[in-house]
Amino acid sequence: MNIIVLCDLEGAAGVVDFHTQTYDETRYNDQAKNLSTLEVNALVDGALEGGAEQVIVLDGHGSGGINIELIHYEARVMFGRPLVSAWDLGIDFDAMFLYGHHAMENTPAGVLCHSWSSRAISNCWLNGELIGEIGFNIANAGEAGVPTAFISGDRAAVDEARAYVGNIEGVTVKEGLSRTAALTLSPAKARDLIREGAKKAMGRIGEFEPYRVAGPYTFETEYRAESSAASKASSPGVERVDTHTVRITGDTLAGIAERK
Image 1 (cartoon, rainbow, N blue to C red):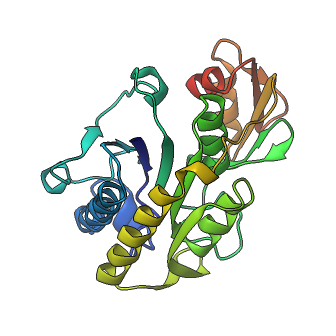
Image 2 (image 1 turned 30 degrees about the horizontal axis):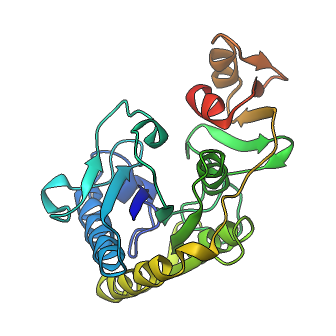
């Protein structure tokens, strides 16, 4: 079986702050990457123990969220920028695993919650429904015929995923106390639970169905600053909705993903 692991940084145990941990070149950014990479390695161990033949790891954190020196020996990594879509690799994936994810912007007690940009974006909607990275990634995989079987992150992230895939195998590594504080598991315990959860998910692959959203698609982004909306609206195919909001439309989510 082939597994694609879409990784983010904010959902790792012990990672709770933008300005010291997740933004590039901040004081503890390297430590956060190391914590995340060790959790990814635990996931890869679990997936392989559960029968995966190939595990492709996609570093989905904007400025990079993986220490490539520490990555699992058996993992293959989609690393650097710009990246092509995982669905264009010519690999038939049996499932997608979401590692280290966070809830959408404005989620109560969502640790490091945001929607694509913690600095620039207030809200996003797909076909009129509020959506974050979790929902969009699950739907994008579903359009490619790939079910989502696993998620790890804070409690709010796991709950958000279950709104799309009710039976998803979820591992909660921290409970949000605020946007930038959490009651977190130790990194070592989080790794153990992620390994176990990934192995369980592999044993349940046949239980998951691809989550699909019917097209055509309208994707709207509300920016915090009017200037950001104006700049985005200058791109081809982007419509200005109001002072802070822009809209793109398309027949496929893959096409939306390329332009959003």
